[in-house]
Image 1 (cartoon, rainbow, N blue to C red):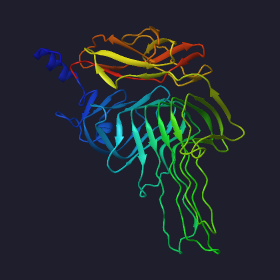
Image 2: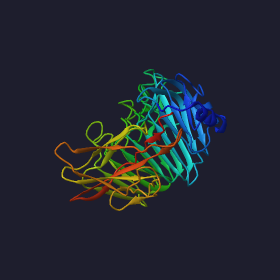
Image 3: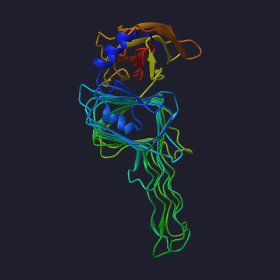
Amino acid sequence: MKTISLPLALALCLAAPSFAEVIDVGGPNPDATTIADAVGLANSGDVIRVYPGQYESFTIDGKSLSVIANTPASVRVYGVVRVRNVGASDSVELSELRYGTQDLLQLVISDCQGSVRVQDCAFRNNLESYTLDYAVGVTNCSNVAMVNCSATARDFGITSNSFSVSGYGYVGQSGIIATDSSIALYDCTVDGGDGESRYSGTVWNPSYGGSGGMGVFLRGSGEFFAAGCFLQGGWPGNGDGFFGSDGACGYAVQGWQANYSVRLLNNNISGLSGACGAGVAITPGSTLTTMTGSATLLEGPAWLRDTDTLTVTVHAEVGARVGLLFSTGHDNQFTAVGGPLLVHLPGGPNYQSMLYLGRVGATGAVQTSVPMRDLPAFDHVPLHLMATSVSPQGPRYSNPVTPILLDSAW
């Protein structure tokens, strides 16, 4: 913590707005008790720092904000998080938000032309009372990236064994539904839900099992890129063995009547058992490219103070040459070489076009530490980071990581 003289501290208080640029939710000196209240207080560009606890739904509408957990894996949210109307020059970051004991945290991102970054979050839909048929939904968005996240759809169980149950079981829900959007997944786990089982139909009213849900369901047109992920569809529900039939397996990735550019790199889509829950089904009008080589993945903190040292780890192909890119902004535009490409905007702290880290050894990872520069009192800035690796397979760009750099006075 910096030592601030009394005259300077008084001047800062008099000059500051009625709420701080870093808004604390919970903790020893809270500015708000709920995330929703903090979003209401915030202006674009502010950081919402959330202390450990259980919180309710919130919506970010037309603001450029970062919502980050003060302590990793300590913030539990129940309900639906909505991000919408993010302008082309704005961005939203969500970091370290997890579903709690109620097994319900859904993410809905819609009508966003700016970048939306979701890092180290866990989403799940496991309650009948919520009508959204996915864990994560992305609609009409041009720049969405999810890193080290999970999206788990609801499983349907057995409705009944009585003879009164007939007809078709419910189809399992999808882990992620993307409609008319560009979305990139890195190091994520996505599970489609199991279909509903129905038994004991009759020859006049047979019972059919519901099909398994999709891991990732693509609709409309857009771009989908996944690297280093585990993707699977859901199990089919069972039907009556005499009169009805079982449902179908869900696909790991399905583009139905879609016009998507789909590129997959180093993912696990082996499925639940054999072919069930596996595979990629892309209808005519879309393109599928299965790329060779290993994914390049970047790990870094959600936030740090300017007195700290930034430590990041890059996982890449053994023998690859690795560099770390710094910038004050990044883009999610896809490149032919395999991943979203950083856009360089000089002027931020520690701006460099690239810091060369060396070759990747037998461990498959390279780690580096970079000291931060001192910021003005009570200032903060996002640091946009991305790694690049060059191997015999060609260059690869990693996932974006955006630590929030805070002045130590915070």
